[in-house]
Image (cartoon, rainbow over all chains, first blue to last red; front, side):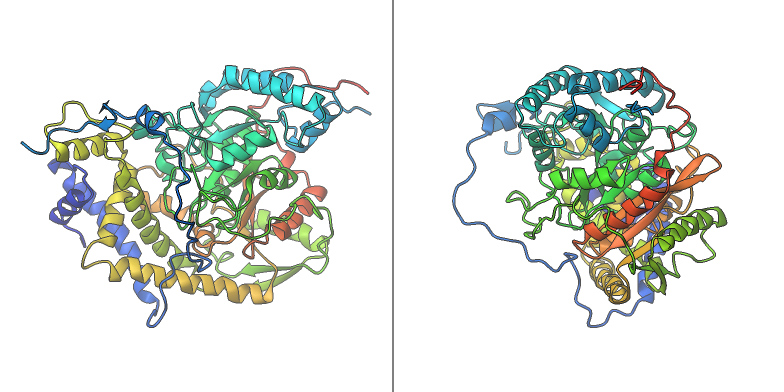
Length: 95
Length: 500
């Protein structure tokens, strides 16, 4: 296997996902098979090839640095799990 | 002679004509489709939210607009939106538990544009969770079934949209396509679907999967309807900085022009021994029709077709892992109960909210972007992406359109590939390179194999949807494959128009 259960646990931590210990082996096995397939990339010579991030090589347009948005706080916070006085509530982070 | 028109199989173009001639009202159409959804959707599960009351009100407004002489061709035409498009005041779930409670405060640009044209939203369609899948089996709301055989998958990720069109729930639906998610389900459900050029249609308000690949398009019963709908969807948008600032033609203009001398390339990699003889025979039959219309078939090569799968399954998960980092249980979406601390809130909200395939792709993407692996995976994939893009460019020096299958086979049984993600990924071999290269792709019904549909795919030059649509329309002018109706679609109400 190209990816160990320990690797999976570390990537899961980076991705803020909880993979139960009992599932790590199975996840690592499938993960490895995907990476083995992805290794097909190594068969292509890419020296000096510019990476492509936009299929038309377009650069993103910039807009004028002016305020265009009006205040939507109430509408946006209406779908939040917990708010108070216009703030999003989360568990205490500073004691 | 009869001019009776069957709502279950009518195209939007035909219905628009009926509306214009006053032979039916939008309210009648809307009530008809709502009733049909109510009756048949439990067996198909293509629609996950129905907007009955709102739809009737919008239909009545459309009828008034038409009476005042201010109608567009789409005014009063009922349609469905894939549940990835934000709809103000209507739950937009992306078929995920994560967004099961999400009611957007705004409309996607595509939704606004179609609303402005006067379409009537009947509801939202089922899909693979966050558009990650090719079978519609990863939906939090259960799998959609194929109207041609309810034991089979409809394809994905826009499987609910494709199944709904095939089942006669509406003449039009929106879809999105990141690696084949419009074209493959269109093929498996026997409908017409277009993935426009990357940048042709605004992505604003479409829940992001892989931002350099995602593109929205029409799913319909005919090429003519794709042109009609794309006219209303396309155009640059200040709300999407990757939308293309390029002229939008009238896609219906010149649709029926001939295709004499059109050069159609057949990539040898698409017609290898891996392609099943049944599918190859249907594709060859469709190509023979195009040849009879005066098109010239030319052998070409797309040498990195195989490597396209590996390239896609690095780039798409990498972009997805970044896009889906926004779901943290703080501002919207699922939040776990009684979090112990902030980290616990993030981790549990995400682990509870995302399904297995979504978590798998986030993990693969996070890995490909992580320190020490970035060059070997993400950068390498972006380099191969440019080579694949160049392959298409070289091919388009020789031909005007590229043709091949839209999927390796017809619909398979539910569950057949669910345990094997790699087998599922291979479903997209003919479609995902088109997204990597940012090109338009059209899937058109090409007949049945053992009573299940299969689609022909036509791929075009960037921003040349018009040529694809013209070739597709010529094919539909001389064949009736797009008129085939699944056995489910027995009539649920009388036809309109009666005897002339």
